[in-house]
Amino acid sequence: MSTVLDSIVSGVLEDLQAREIPLNQLREQLATAPAVRNAYDALAKPGMQMIAEVKRSSPSKGALATIGDPADLAKSYESAGAAVISVLTEGRRFGGSSADLVAVRSAVSIPVLRKDFIVTEYQVMETRALGGDLMLLIVAALDDSQLRDYQALAHELGLNVLVEIHDELELDRALAMNAKIIGVNARNLKTLEIHEDAFARLLPLIPSDRIRVAESGISTRQQVVAAESAGAKAILVGETLVRASDPSLAITNLLGR
Image 1 (tube, one colour):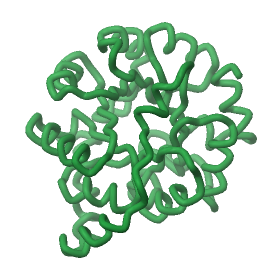
Image 2: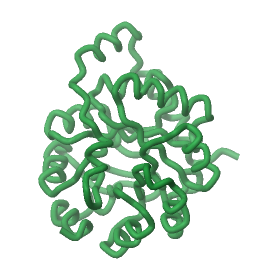
Image 3: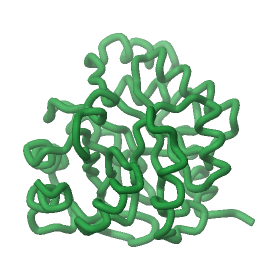
């Protein structure tokens, strides 16, 4: 039976076919891409860190916010203390675009995560060509060979990689590829259900020498404290910020600063 994740990946591949350029042109873009900013170091700084997300919509909630100027929103995130900006570039379900990433990357001085469904080597190279510093690999969407190959290519290009898991078996696969930044997504991408016990169950299983990120379903300071108690070094927050009347204040409140 086809899952939500299967449907998203099918759309990603169709859209990729429409925008793909010859590899020699992509390599020319890589040669002129801005220097990489180290996302690992940004997230490893003392205290809880935030990956603040530019996100217009989602498959589970539909339209979330009208973001006319993603660069302005990203600058407000940075000024409020975000360590990394996440930019959705998937268009069909999340309302994002490559143009959003380029605009945000040029407007802020902190690392930028390309949040998308990376399922081809081309997208890895495209991420760096667009100016991305950190790239998402979703274990549920890839086989072990793809995970290893895409991570190796990302590292060769200077990118850090956020490896996303949803359960114990996926964690084993992330550890087998020696992932350094591991995100626990409380939302099951196959069903879109939130598993509220995910952070408490999975974060403590991740070795303490990795950067542990809590993703999805975070809207209160109490949830941040609970995630930190379970071992999270960073949180990834999108919906709560884009729906807030004052995103900067929302970041301050979530981080308890």
